[in-house]
Image 1 (cartoon, helix red, strand yellow):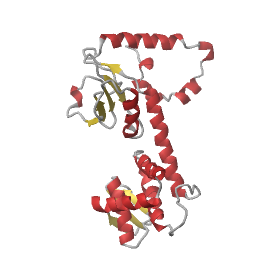
Image 2 (cartoon, one colour; image 1 turned 45 degrees about the vertical axis):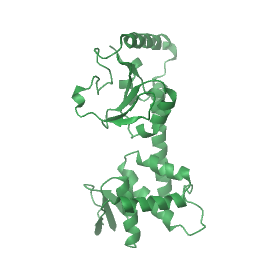
Image 3 (tube, rainbow, N blue to C red; image 1 turned 90 degrees about the vertical axis):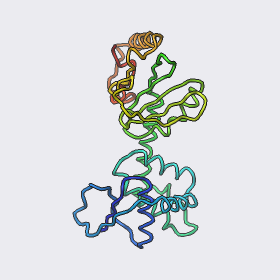
Image 4 (cartoon, helix red, strand yellow; image 1 turned 120 degrees about the vertical axis):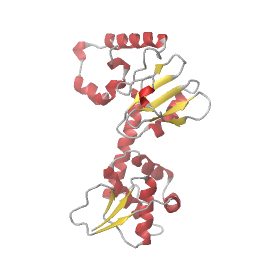
Length: 263
């Protein structure tokens, strides 16, 4: 059994594909440093990420796959799941091993690697939809709207365009507390990816997303109270269905949702 070891980046994975063809071999597993080697692994190859090699592999994919399949690959990578590495590696290798004129493999769901990559991409896209539904904004005194999230998958890059369209005349910051970065939009230019050198100094809590009282707009304090009151008022106790609510609104999102918080 042959195992390739890479640095956990997309460039590293694409370089691994390049190396596999250059060495005329098909590794059984693609692992990151620190992963436990399979019991019967008798050979390893350390992949050194190379932007040029990765670019050549991606250019080859662009020639062989339709745009929707390329997007599927990019979206699946945002899952950040280690279980994706080997199936995605094999998937890309199979694309290049397809005979000329053969049908593209992205819809061959009988192939376990294609199915695994597709299912993971669907999970990421599902969380993207959840983010659009469950991000709650607070208005700061300077007029900037803040939304704090901590999704299971790294979905901010694919949801930001939605908020640029939806709130294109407002300044806002959406911050991923788990990954320690966010996007700031000033209502005119393209959104900017930002990080904080000292998160301890930011005017909001990473635990629940709340702006500090000193930073929160007085108008927004009132609106939050009204929203919580409305949320409670429309709840019909006789029709409460906790299981259905958890299905529609998973508990992991509650800590950042105004209607689930108490001041």
